[in-house]
Length: 111
Length: 117
Image 1 (cartoon, chains in turn brown, red):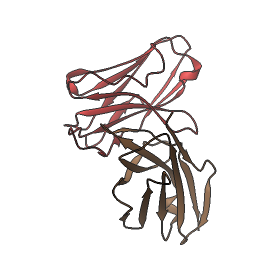
Image 2 (tube, helix red, strand yellow):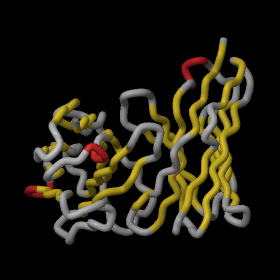
Image 3 (spheres, chains in turn brown, yellow):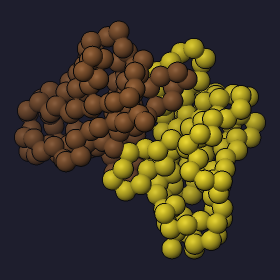
Image 4 (tube, rainbow over the protein chains, first blue to last red):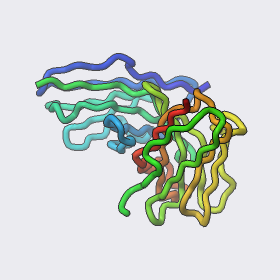
């Protein structure tokens, strides 16, 4: 069955450093992959989408890579800030927008 | 409103009771999804509506779960004879639903936190 793996342990980093989150998937060939941010008690919020023919996508301090050979996406936040602290969800998708979400990685940025 | 709204925000019920959860989508969005999120878990797909097409019910965990979408707008998720394992946050999301445009952003509501005692 399709499986999405994200680091289950929280990622703790110092303010100003680059945070790197990993998403691995198996038994799946998604046409695109989305990243969402979720704050406690709230629904996820869309951040970035990258398609299978794109290697890298950037938006402000965010960068996403998509390696269809490794079946992996990396999500980077540069110059991280305490306000970036949240859970980040990876969601590969295909077809009619049916997404499969990973459990998410909690990021904590310390001043 | 500008976003997806859900009601109630919190629901406490007794085991065996039925509950109805409501989702009001963004105006004009034709695609609507229901997900379930248990504590510390990822989002579990439940059901998907797209326009007038038959819904994709492949994620519903049992026949106690059902959902309707009236007039292509408001959706109601019904859980009959609730069990303690149904306790979770139920999230609704909508997207524009333009056919053939894969990868559309999904806009989520704040969720309904269901606790079954």
